[in-house]
Image 1 (cartoon, rainbow, N blue to C red):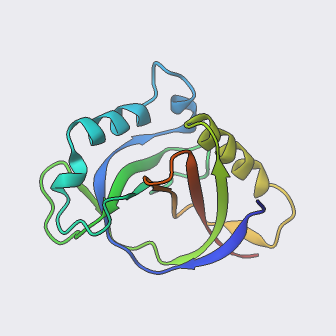
Image 2 (image 1 turned 90 degrees about the vertical axis):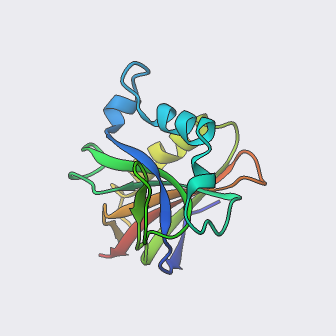
Length: 158
């Protein structure tokens, strides 16, 4: 499916995370994201999210970019919930409002996600009418539908 443009309203997300780079994630010895996933599920983080409103949706957010896809960013695995009062160890993301280019993919995970991100990195190098913002991007998983993901990339017109 070809990428498409979508407006996203503000949503409050709460979860756990780390700071990482794509280079670190490409090496199994330095990758941090698998540990975040493991902790999220083994520690049942979703159940501790204040006012969790959609337990079947899972968001993998990349934000606070150092520069571009080659620099460091914060990665937060989260669900919808209240960011007003957070327990120790939880991270809140209060605003995701904006225009996003959406890339949909299905297949075996995590290989499908990795391949889609590689497509995204090249996509914005080409001559398109939107520029990537590197503000807040996210993967959205509907946990009732295995092996499907939508990746939202913050953009603005060139």
